[in-house]
Image (cartoon, one colour):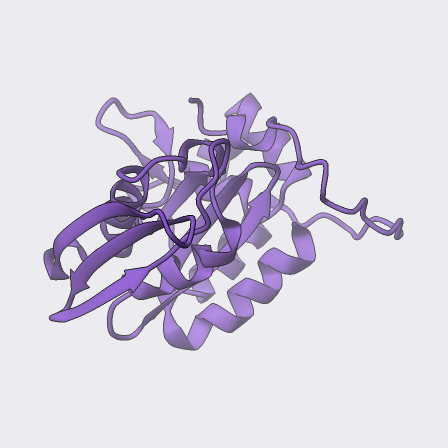
Length: 204
């Protein structure tokens, strides 16, 4: 999946349509990078404003989804192409539908948070009586068990914030935003998480 396909996937039919409001003035690439750097997400590998502006796909999506799309092009991969910031990951809600999908998500989140070294056993299972998936994991010597709703077609979005926070580690907190059937999660210093969440909420 390309870095911006997360924005092209349809929304849930249950989502209410947004209330029409006058469109705000869109921040420039430089303004977005400046705000994100102040909140703990600086560009990596020498990526600058011009690098992003020169990418036609990135420039278009960043105008449509300020502060979220730009997270996908703030670093460079091994091939030199622009890629997402290392403290950012995306979650495909349609792919969390089995007992092993949630353990895989926990590992993915810990990688993004930079706390994989604190993650020990991760197990998935099914609670047939309650109709729930089970994900059990030990993080920083604390064992937790979370019970997402058991469905056959998509994830339980209610438990996502709990999962995001569970592997953040000391001094970090997640900020996140949902777009259609995907979510973007960013891990930043705890003192900045509230403001970054407000930025995401304003521009989502």
